[in-house]
Length: 117
Length: 114
Image (tube, rainbow over all chains, first blue to last red; front, top):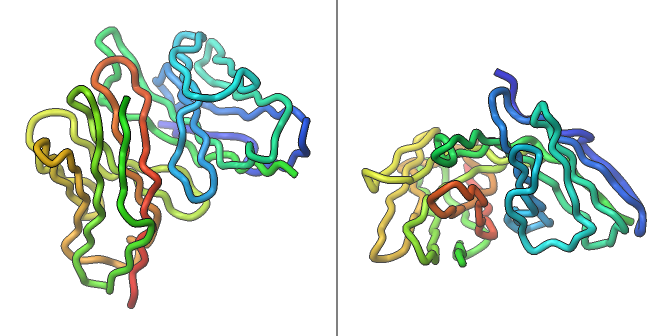
């Protein structure tokens, strides 16, 4: 069973640039959630993708966008980067069935560390 | 809206001592509750979860937590700390139902002294 993988591991960008982060979900999972973890803070929910559509969004501006592909992998795109976007970005996959989240558990990847200069 | 409060940002214990990490939650509906551990430069690993049933939940690495509805608490304990327990610990809450968004606390750093 393959776990959740994320790429790249680290990334350095400058203000105003755009960035794309990638996530491959765990085998058999159909839902991907993205979280932002600023230094010294707990993860904050950005959004979730299910069946290739956004299925819930946290308090993040529209310059944070995403995609989910038919193989359930996902991308997080951030436009017009700001210094405060510097954080660890975590992807979590889960299996959602007809009755809701199965096993009530999300499996997290190792994260992508984004630094904005 | 849901929220999680983890009192204190840092706990230090001696090896072999009791570990107690506190978590209180606020939720308008009965929640699901989770504890995650994060080692340096790694993602989150699930320690244990409470969904329904027995309120005392046992997890990995000897950790356990008790859901106390009357106190809106879900404190994490381990009878005897090990050096390898040094990490960041996060309490999280989720509503029941299909929406699987997790709301996390700010986390507690656990240090273990030899």
